[in-house]
Image (cartoon, rainbow, N blue to C red; front, side, top):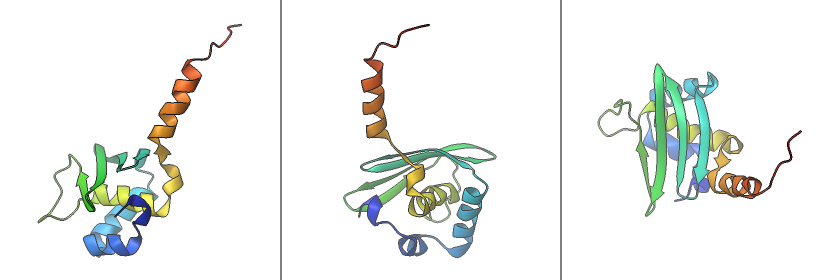
Length: 116
């Protein structure tokens, strides 16, 4: 599995409808910020009473999510991690490619900008 292959049908299999509704609400209320993608990870800050730095990773075809919220129930994904994944599936262009961004910044940091 790769993030490019992730779709809403897959998310339906890993989360119940009420959790998906919570995740959609977080997205609709613009509570997901600073979305980044790397080849094997997605990262974002999800604001829900307090900021949660959320990460989803795919290793050896297995999806894993990390969120400091402790809202997982019986091994289910939390609403913040699901919101991250759902945001990726529905609006992948909102996620900056961290590798490309680093390369651009490295290129610009070598240029001298004249003052005044």
